[in-house]
Length: 85
Image (cartoon, rainbow, N blue to C red; front, side, top):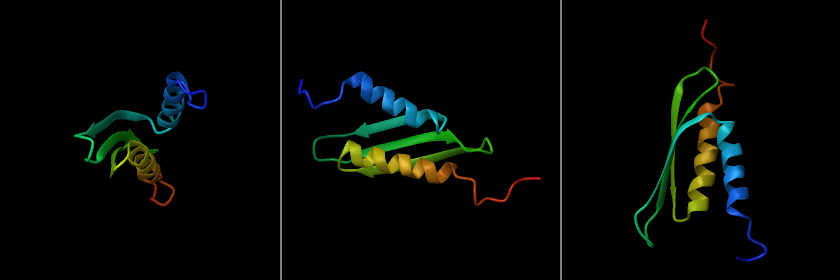
């Protein structure tokens, strides 16, 4: 293993910390082959306890995961939604 590569435990802990803030209920990753896209989706609860789904796809896992996390941030952001009475 290269000395500049982070351990799997470190990567897992970072991913867990990122997803914990989003209260993810399900994370799904699919890669069909070496020349195909990575598809990722996740379900989470927003601040109003509503289930939201975010999806993303990209040619690399890093690209798909980065986009998914951005989409989850947007989907769970309720700052512009009117509050229910």
